[in-house]
Image 1: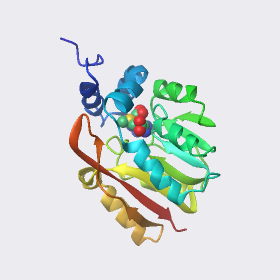
Image 2 (image 1 turned 60 degrees about the horizontal axis):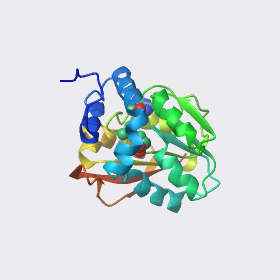
Image 3 (image 1 turned 90 degrees about the vertical axis):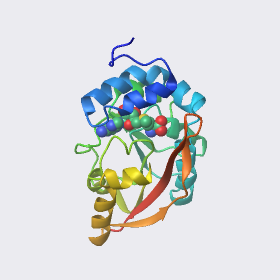
Length: 216
Ligand SMILES: C[S@@+](CC[C@H](N)C(=O)[O-])C[C@H]1O[C@@H](n2cnc3c(N)ncnc32)[C@H](O)[C@@H]1O
């Protein structure tokens, strides 16, 4: 039997294994570092991860192709690849795991890649991006990150991310979004339809794309 720090045998087990330490950034980073080489084959090919394609469709409705977009928790750049194929060129990537970013870099779709922790202050100036997008990361962060993410989005810019209904309340996203809306900082633009995130692994794991707009 493998010890718990070793990469498990199957793609299905690897998803749960990475998520199991989601409350600890150091351990999460180590697990994604260990998984990076096999991540695309597991997630995109074997498990048919739908998040990047679903999120990209929503980005196309809200962000012009010339827009400056930060992909927060970009991982190996699955979303960046789709956005680049749709004509988006001003993409930056951030992620906790350098090994995931190293794979993303090989795809040559991001103009910059930053190793960064979304739970800490981000290195970008205020009002820098037309949009911050994030797919498949909400289980690893809490709603508090929206204050910092909002800071780096320009007024009228968007925050577009995937999240399950359970995680929205459990991670405190509902409270933070509600507070920022009441403060007149953000508005909810749309909450999309539910879709099965990883249909070949867990057809019952449903998620949605949420769209927020910065007001001021
Ligand atoms: C399930 S993967 C999703 C990656 C990519 N967005 C995709 O759709 O394939 C979660 C990613 O979030 C990153 N991550 C987890 N916690 C993070 C944090 N606190 N700050 C930045 N990235 C984080 C992990 O390193 C990993 O690359």
